[in-house]
Image (cartoon, rainbow, N blue to C red):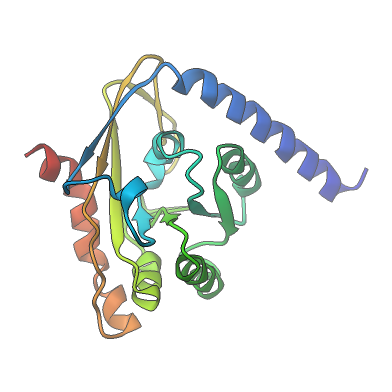
Length: 215
């Protein structure tokens, strides 16, 4: 067996095991969603949006928004193949790339998906950090496509934290998980450069989202 086929087989089995483990664990979570607006923009919004979430909270959102056909940007390196297969097992479609590396191709793919009517999701601090830093890729895609940004946060009352660059969050069995969803935020910048310059503002908004909704 060639190295490529062996890696693909390992990725396939690792993704199956990860997906099965997540389903067993996540079915014990008690999840509630809090929305900044008056309706569920994830399931009821009448046009595509671009979701932005911190990489460390990815597992929580992947479970909560499963089977909705959201398109997720997944890294091309490291464990990206395993992550992509696990996401697809939960009903997501995937784009391989990064908002930092190979950004132009990935952003074009994101914009095309949005223009085709799909919701897409991006971790603006992934795949390598720094944690909770907001790379401008999603904002550029929003400016190109005209789609608004919707910010997502997840807070678990008890969770494991991995020793990774972002201290990845895995809620413990029977954890109470709160999902925070912002109102759609337009990126009305006149140029791609101006859209990228909005990154510090969106970084602050995403960091403050739970407090903004809880009041």
